[in-house]
Image 1 (cartoon, rainbow, N blue to C red):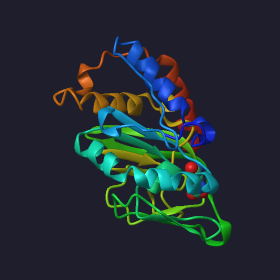
Image 2: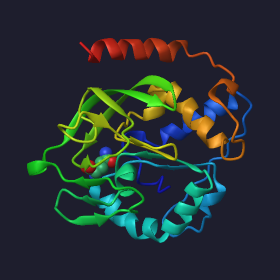
Image 3: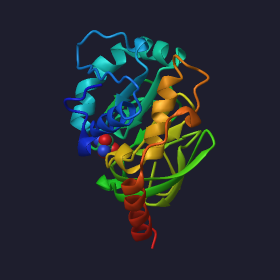
Image 4: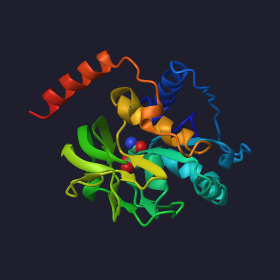
Length: 238
Ligand code: GLN
């Protein structure tokens, strides 16, 4: 959604990773885009993806996003999986207070809300979290840059090992409840975290194949990714 401007740090590159990992397994992958004012029934998709953006961009898209609230609810009820990065993640909660103190209403599907950082402070830098995705224990590596401090998150995605996460002091990052995965991790997220990419593929396939499991995905050669992850983990966790 809003691929033409919600693409901070190349977030839409995440879709290229899903495409490659699906095609390597012979799984059909169709990428569509949904811009402001474009008619789409989002409940017909297996996955909805919304990346991050600057405050100005979030303000620009919010009337359109709110107009799709019922349709997005229907999509989630019908098991469309939702992947949200940073600005997109914030907008599924109650509200986001932008850096100029203006209040952006969220979709209000969840209790969490996002205040602005004190005196313009921002959480910036590399981040590693320890996450458990329906039993899949994995370290998720990324890069964060957000003024927003997301609070009252009932089911965080993971525990922060390096970096900040949802807020300066909270110690936890992101949100995951089985239906949506929201995170502050850019990087983009999926090239650095093949486990998460495969998890998103599995969750998306479950819309039409509820019995589909991680083990049903054909294993792929992950040697380069594994080595790169090892180097990053050693470097950042020193
Ligand atoms: N503008 C939001 C913030 O600063 C989101 C930033 C982002 O998507 N990286 O908190």
